[in-house]
Image (cartoon, rainbow, N blue to C red; front, side):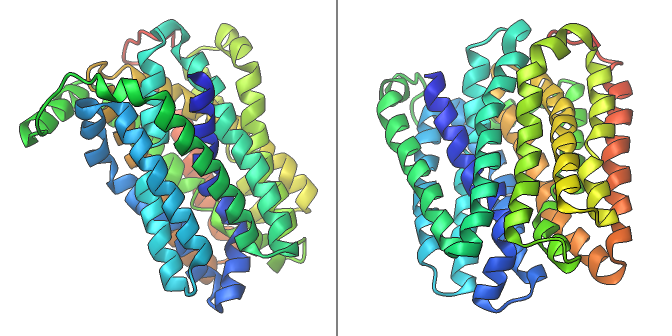
Length: 388
């Protein structure tokens, strides 16, 4: 079953942040400005975020596996529609559908995994699962940049569609018995959803978890759609080099996943969060200073390590907010993160247009301070998953 989860994570990653590398190519293809083309990231992130308050209760009530399978098939349709879209407006429409679909993949998958691991092993299991998504980012971002330069951006989307189709088929067969064994009958009521929300937010750490990931998405993923433009405008490379840079972020995250057992044995969670905030700003510093792309790739690797040093701690805390409403808890986690990731590109685009690269100092300060501040705030609350 863990193998199926890996494919689901890979499918989600290939259709998500990897597309950031293609923005300049898409802009040229449809003759729209880069700032307009960057809307394909925001219009994917907004429905991803806003669909979570609905998908979470549905997963807890009707069964997580049912929601997962349905969303995987919808993702396949959205990617194929994006490939065949003759206009930029239709591309945006299919990306919107893809955002809704992706909203039921990673959160539900992590909730299903959390159901099968005790608190002592949960953070390590989730960390290893991240390798799938991060591998998709490394592979997808790098390949997307290369293919966009040589064959056009649509060529990469065929690969994303193929992996999504594989995940949909495998999940359909693997979870068919799990879906039919769900005990709840009838239709979900508003009172059921309200009760689930009450259980999650009764935990004092809930608001802190969701606010933290919202700031992560706002400050870091607000920058990623502009990587290719910033590299090209400085004469440092093309979409190919931008793909290497963005892929290095995923590589840094994979390095974190591999050394996670050592990190958990030797660092308190508050230290992981604080250092994650510091290291996570490395790649943004490189973009602001217009450093050569190999240096920038290294710094984005450092950012990947730092980002997941902080983010994985939050994921472990989300899993413990309420066991009965775990699907909803992870859905609200994703809702908060992708709301930040949707708003971020709009704000960063405004800053780059009117101020230029120096405006990125705001993103650096927000991300860095988030890690430092929340490390102290979380330490005030007891946790079952490890010492602070």
